[in-house]
Image (cartoon, rainbow, N blue to C red; front, side):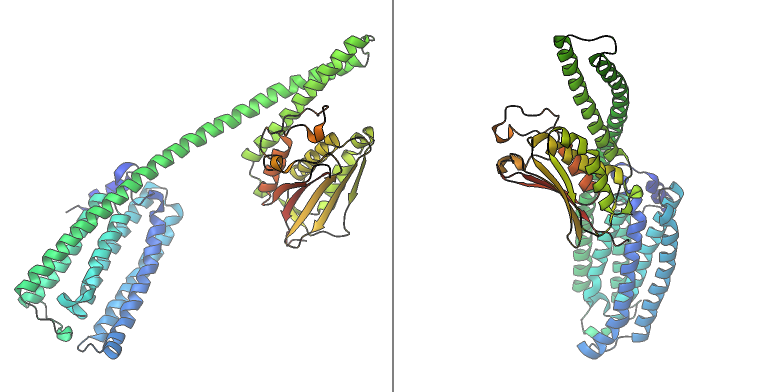
Length: 462
């Protein structure tokens, strides 16, 4: 039989087929779960004895001994619960995993001991509760390493065999309440059937658990590799954004100086080319800004930055920031806000970024003389922000993919002067809304304008 020391050594192995549980770091949680179930088993023994005697009508049951066994099991289980609770807080350490494995072995031995006593008291060899030995073999296969599972299955079968043979030989007094005649044929049948069932159950369960552990280990290793690659990608993205954005901004400033006549007046052809180059580089700066926001959404811990906020001030500030751009196109931009709005938990800079993308798109795609309205409404469980324009609208077939990354729909309303862009703005809005446990969407019909919205959960905080 597997020694306790070698079993504990296997508990330290955190990879391959000797993993304890599907994940070795979950041993404390599993032991705590089984401890709660053990309390139910003790209660079942305590209640089951009187039920079998007075309801079912089984005579000869020793109710005091059954109650003592139940109390003993519950008392031992209290110690197990306290020990596991203290160890599972820091169960990642090897020493605590060794102790948890030791507790697992002792608890299974305790279960076998109490089970054997209880079965002896409620019928012995003829008891229908002999099948609980198989249940414990399954639990051992789930809870322990494969070799330990086989060892404890053998322990359980030896307990069963000792009970059956002890009653047959008279060493253990029989409880004749069930009226079953114990002879040689019954003893051989019980030993053979339960031995075969224990072996088959342990082999099948241990095999399934081994496959689960190997697959789980492979998934964990793949997840760790993906996390390393993602961390490298994020670091690379931050470095590239920083190193590209700074010189690009400098070049834009120099080109604007040239266009403004800082080094002398340019002829019309030169000024046209400089202005085109400036516009292209400004588009690149917009792309870099969008990528930076996406990178922040991936890398930052946003929950700790969220505070209860009143959206009216955020909306008013975003509208004010875009008034000049709307006026340059002869558009009317206004905000329609209620006197009060429920607070939402959010990050102001991200929500302003989302509104800025909506407003930029509305100004870009709405013609001269158009109207853009920003509204906020109380939806009860959520607050809805809408940016409505009277532009050309968007076909229904294209609305479903608008919020994807690097997605731009075709010419709106048949326009040939379609504004340029990278198709990141709406995907950023979607990601910001989802980071706030909300959603973003659009309602539009060709020729009737568009309404882009964000819905954010209302907060109970003032």
